[in-house]
Length: 57
Image 1 (tube, rainbow, N blue to C red):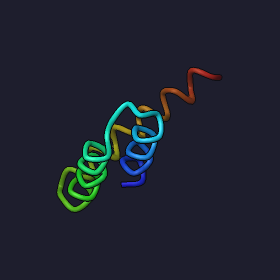
Image 2: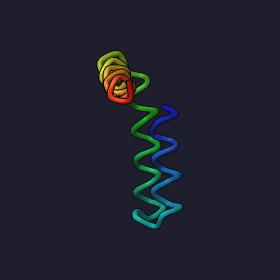
Image 3: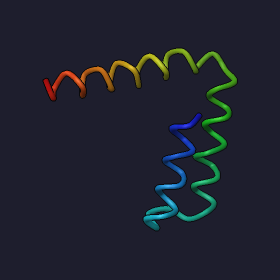
Image 4: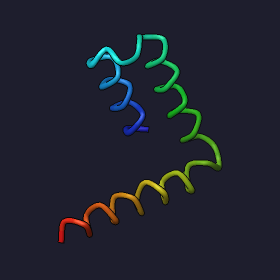
């Protein structure tokens, strides 16, 4: 959920998306957090972060 909130704020701040699009992105984060999709999304993000961290070593 925090990831979607940060992405929404970044999109609005850089003017790459309007307020409506950022709101949809933020609300999608709430929707995904409250469903069974949370665990696979969390695992995917965690695996991606781990892979990026390993590239630096």
